[in-house]
Length: 434
Image 1 (cartoon, helix red, strand yellow):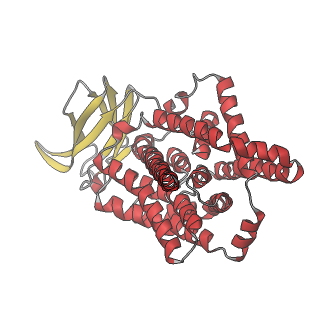
Image 2 (spheres, rainbow, N blue to C red):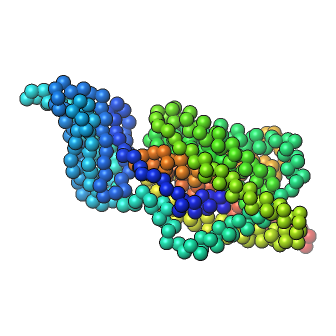
Image 3 (cartoon, one colour):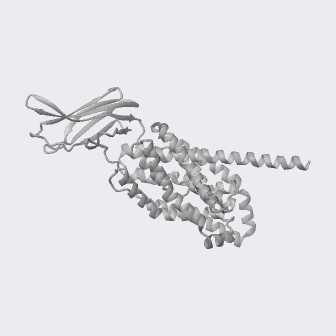
């Protein structure tokens, strides 16, 4: 969660570039498209493989079901040699409507329907494409600096809890790290792909789930490892390892599953963002390790503030995640919410089950489960925003936010159950002694 908060703050300083115009093709008319419009004036490019029998004999007919939401201003043929058209649209108010697009050819006095796309769903929302970063712009800069300082102090405190004996054990027996890597970069992306196909999600959202499932562990993993009596040192090591592996595995999985989903184009992997995430974890934790060995009394003080400080940051991160995600939840349907709940739950289940089968200690099993279930979803968001056209980017961006919010809810529920059980056990022992 702490790493997710930092990734949200980074969005304030990142320019995503101008989005490309969405297009539809008569070549895949069996698929129902979904377009997401945010501006008053929008443009769609229509492409067809049909060849005119006579110059300019073909024309495009476009009809909207609700002119109050969407109006067709004009339709322009881009070239006389090919049947490609540009549709200029005007949005008046928020809502949903459908477009019907037909390609006709006039043969003498007769007109013949060549191709047709029915029920192109259009969702209109008056958010700008930069609203993701603008959602935090009005927050006082001093407050942001205070939050970042708290994050760095918290990571430094976690560095004071690093146990070198655990590091030596993991170095000799790296099975937990291998289990986490296999779950995160092989099993989870495949499950995301399979489930999105079963639920027949649009291609952009299906790829959003695959991409979110192939993200490395989130920085909040070692916080929950601490609160749930897991292995904090192992959790930090797994987070750093998976973030490093993401430099290779995210491009590989993006290429493989984009081809399987029939998506073409170049996917931009935010290498600098992944590296900055890794450094943002390693540098303050390394400072904490130095403090533990050079100034032990200061390390003891930092260890005492870990829990209260972590809880404060956890709720700040949850608030910002839900606040920013609310603008995308307008696109979330029942299938997206269901998969959003399943993705972190499956990661937790797979990680714990594999570690249990390998007969690893209970704290290690918890840690592998947490690192497999809590994903750095905002890396997926960055790739989506950098790689897709505006309409597809908004449609797919709902996925990482949904997974992030569901992860928060599920982990807080698990933490609540853990605290209730711990309280019941303590009360039982107190009652037995009395």
